[in-house]
Figure (tube, rainbow, N blue to C red):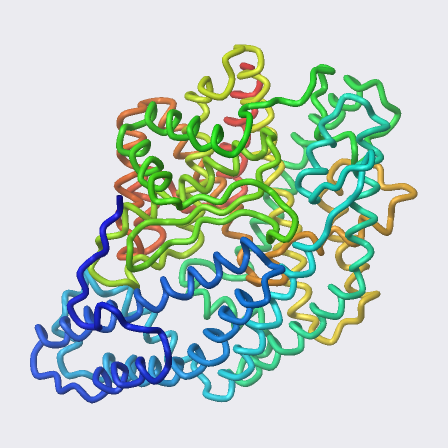
Length: 566
């Protein structure tokens, strides 16, 4: 069982209410500092307080997403978002000022604190008191996306399904059943189209206001700074989109044509993209949520005993909620528990192959959480997404050689690996579409719903439109963006998936060539947390932080060669 870490600064039984928190912030703000050692102790004390608050918020979020219909859980989450976070923000800004203005800051270990201090200085640049209530409102409003989508369900053959459960029918070999499921899912999403459009319109207005207050021309430019994107620019993103269009889309178009021929169809429709082209029934890698967890523990053990033990610890401590049910928020995540040092994995399993890959993906994040748990400062654990997603996407590929725990039939194992590699490539154009769409949204803040629809369609079709014939289904095509929760809840958090996917392919390539060295480099990189730059972390993993056309081409060709072997 996980043991509570001893607190050295804040009370052991601190109740998270503002009247209990403010004295601690005041003490940190007023404490005299007369040496480098005292400054570093001040940082550790501040870190301990922040970790406790982060974990408290984590549990409020986790419990709310596990049961979106529970009004009490929603209110507890909103209490933190509206009554605690806004009051912490000004104090954090003052504490950041105290740090950077200290006469001892320049005497601190530059190698150890460079990345952290760079982020603190950027936070100071961006802070505006007038943005606090707006950011609170954004926090509350964007959670409505989970409530709206978590309530969605459909009836098929007189049985009620969540959308995740219904999506499993898209793998059925009976085309009429697939079409019915797709039409029901799509029809249900379209019922709430107007509500979600209005929600996004509000979020757009609020986010643009935050950017203007911080003296930025638009929210895109603001977010590049807020996300700490020190290593690349918007133009680099556009170049990356172009590389994907040039090097990856043609491979996927070729694969789609093979699918059309194998299924003997005149054209591929949205309900034809998940069924196995051999005519075999959908892969069933596990029986239920418990079976998925147990098999994943076995799989991770086979890669490295350390990895398997991490998932065992999570199971023993009840840190999984994996099965889909009505009222549960959509999607999946790994939420680090900042003080405990363990993670919580949330997902919506419907007993499909995609759930296996979600589990190993989130398992990669979970391993990352454990590896960084003992870093000295809480901020050292706050990895940028380009690094966090490298942890998870690499695990999807590294784990493949041990998927025999899910598939005892060698032919099914081959199918699973082939499907995974196609999905790896399919990720890249979808990432380009979502990212480019967000660039357009926020650099055109006064757009209308009709203009937004046109922009989505143009961008989506530039990258192959999923290689589907959308004739007669245009309403569904132009509404696809609403299913991507990142657009509503974590704006601009998406290009990282593309960058990390390239990095993951390179990590897997190293692992294939030398498993022992490859896994050690991967773990060594994750242990760094965010104490080094992204480029340095990637180099520690034995790979490059590079998304040029030539690098995209090299890695896409490697994946294609591995697919051809299957």
